[in-house]
Length: 191
Image (cartoon, rainbow, N blue to C red; front, top):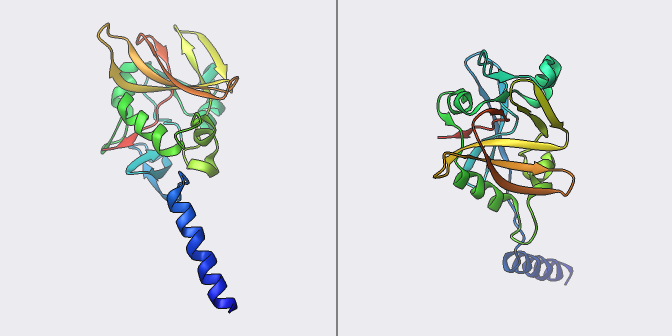
């Protein structure tokens, strides 16, 4: 009788999980190396392979450590202008489009709440977004540990470039746009 109860209980648990919006997914992880032999963690989320760390590949004169402090690059990766962001990803990887980021948000969210917490919480999604701030102009670093700004490869009709903003003050993930003269973080996506 006890075995029958366990089987029935297990069966109803599976039916409940299948009928709800509950997502069960095993996280598949690995590593990636850039041409400077720096190794990055990667994670499969849905059908996409993402870097699970911010890119820290040096492009002279167009990538920066926050406050020009190399310790910030170790933790948060580098900030890139748009042109360097477009060419910074290792071979076989690319700067994701706005649509590819939208797929990520859909995969980590439950459809009811903003996916900010899942992107920030490394245990939840594996993405582990870092709030690396930004560089405005040539010397104004702002928003470290407040905002994470991630370039997309998508431009609008006015040549503005879209980016994903993770804003800690209201736990929100949303898209906005800018010109190409700022420094933002990069997460690469596998081709």
